[in-house]
Image 1 (cartoon, rainbow, N blue to C red):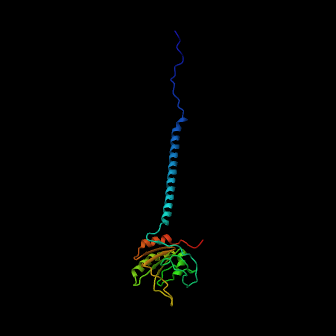
Image 2 (image 1 turned 135 degrees about the vertical axis):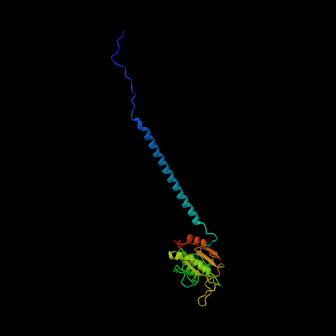
Image 3 (image 1 turned 135 degrees about the horizontal axis):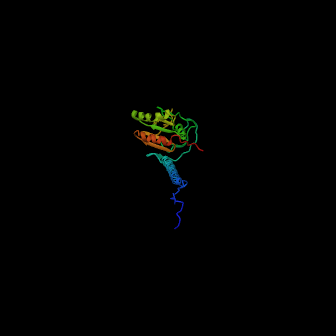
Amino acid sequence: MPKASKFKATQSVPVYSTAGGTKGPQRAKVSRQRRNQNRLIASGAAIFGLLIALVVYFNIRSQRPVTGEEVFSSQGNTHIETNSPSPLAYNSTPPTSGPHYGNLVAWNTFREPQRYEHLLHNLEDGGVIIYYQCSEGCPDIVKGLNEIVEPYIKAGRKVILAPNDPTWTVGSSQPLHKEMGKRIAISAWQRLLTMDEVDSQQIRTFIERYEGVDHHNG
């Protein structure tokens, strides 16, 4: 009979490598990081696209006319001698461009009329001139316009409020103003908005659109 083996059979125990055991969590971590990076890139692209859209929107909006305004062709910006009349008839009343004096009227409210030829330089310099014309007096309109204009003037903005008087003369001159046809006129360079009652929203929209836009040649 064969002799029994001195050695007992030993049960084999599987050996697991720890090297590969970390690959799963590492892959998951890398995957999460990649997803987060993709989200950040997508969010940044969305924000950038929104900013571009807003810039385009406001550029288009800034070029749109204010509801009710009229646009007049430029009659130039030639300087003429102070206190002399314009050598040509203005193409709007009150005028929005054309020959004018070389100095500015103070940015303020006035109770006395001012020469068109003088105020036109303020328009060229980026100003907005608000006229009111009331032969019978219109304290409510004047008060409403003052309330609109005062904050702009206090802030150093280029705005003037003054009466328009088609009967105003100096010495024996012809009337220096003309009939506006409306009780209120808001003017900027080549732009005119008229109304009979104070529309504060429209007036402020007009001021915000055109105040500060310089129109000097070059």
